[in-house]
Length: 449
Image (cartoon, rainbow, N blue to C red; front, side, top):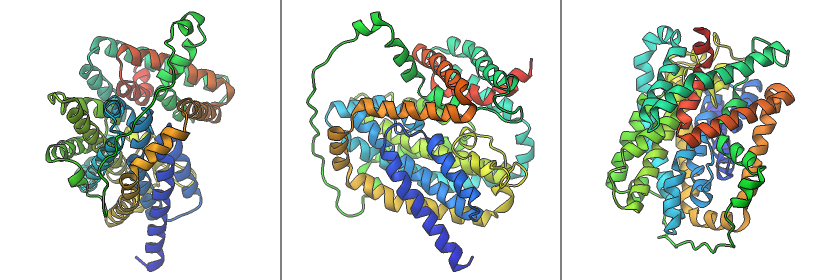
């Protein structure tokens, strides 16, 4: 590897870390919406595949490190994967500890990265000999994931019963667009439906506000004074193994390894399931919330890294929720990358290792330091100058824009319909994980009929 290529690797990784540190701090920045387009641009620019991968790994690590900030200070997910942590972060906020919440989540994210990088590379090497056989069963795998996650929820009967109707809605809208000529039959609508599910509860609430009876019954609050308890300052480069106690480190490491092994499952679903399972027995609310958010953040980072690397190295097809969403440009970006000619075919195992290690190390070195060192200042700034309503409006506008980009004006109505149904199902107890898995498996499931 020549010096020029090494410099490109470092530069791309620094660019990814800096850009997504800024983007991650802004609440409501969905991973698919902000990662996929930029990655696609870099692919079309003709950068070396190893450079693109280093950028992407750095970007997802940085994004996951900083999306804890809007969760901790405003209760708004910085991305889809941050949604399961909101309740626990709000417990710490209630006790005046949002800055501690940020540090716990960021430290969990670092541990998740440390566990996930070697574990993902090892798992990919073990699966690689069976890659072609696995690719044939992508649909059944995703459907099995939907059933599994449905069985793990409290309202399992409702969750199971919703799978086929929700698949009909998703695939029915796609067929409608094909029949009326909105999009070609060899393409599909995915990203905007994905985002419609993500903000389903928000869309549902906005439609409810159009009902005067519901609007009149809403509680009215005066301005509320929020106090931020000063935490102990971190000197030097922060050490995640000191910010987290031993039990939190252990729980996070276990959750991260589980996230790698379940890379093909919905990251949101597994985060909810494992995060709650590993911390339910802790009685003290602050300790339970601290352990839950660190474990969840480690798990989400691990599932994002494994969900990208394992299908990319072992199979070459986007057979994970992560690969189908934010990482899709690494698999399919015609005419540059196709299913028969992408990073799987262009990079050696050593190149995968180099790009992953360089990207992850640079993101941790830059983003983790900023996130932990200045968490209190960031908290104060967000509380003072960023209105909650404005953040929701930006996120909603982003989804509408992407809906229009995917399939024109009619798809805005389609995404609103998906959001209303998804929000209602979520309110009834069908979690995001089940809904995302149905989105992925809908073409295969409806093909059976």
